[in-house]
Length: 241
View (cartoon, rainbow, N blue to C red):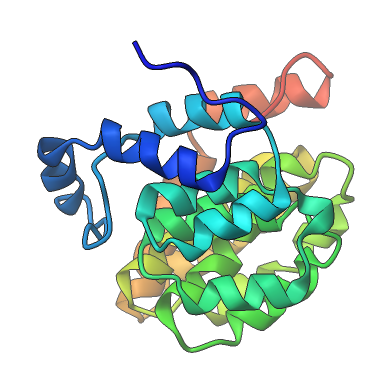
């Protein structure tokens, strides 16, 4: 059994451990889920999260991990960077490297903890690159879940952005737009009605992609379990995820 990584471990040591853990069979399986495996070692996120807990947060090490180009190292970078030390220039630099939906989603979870997250959503949504635009809506979905103190008005104001990009038929964008709409609608009872109204509007759209986004969101936002969780959250009994 190898010694666990520690907060004092370097990026070189972390990458060496990742290489030891690589699994070709897992790597082949990842490709079937649309994950870019050209620089992948075949390590699942459960194991990566465990390594991240051992490493703790370190900004400089995260930058070095990202520069390696290795899929697993980049996810570790996203899981262990320090949001208060992440600058907007770094976010833009990392966005240039986006090449897989799961890298985008892992990094987006980090980006929503920065003070300029809203600027990035607007900027990335306006970007024509598929994975960069996906980042905008992945960030919006994560923010709806994690930024507990943000007023609902912030997320209501993003519904027009969701509508504006609902006809983007590229697979990884349409799924992220749908994800963002669903998470906004599940955030609170106050957001549920406007999000559901938009979902129904999109479901009636003549555009195939918008229609799929809308129908799928309507299905989840009207599900009995979703409505039950919202009701409980309204009374302070349970969170909505």
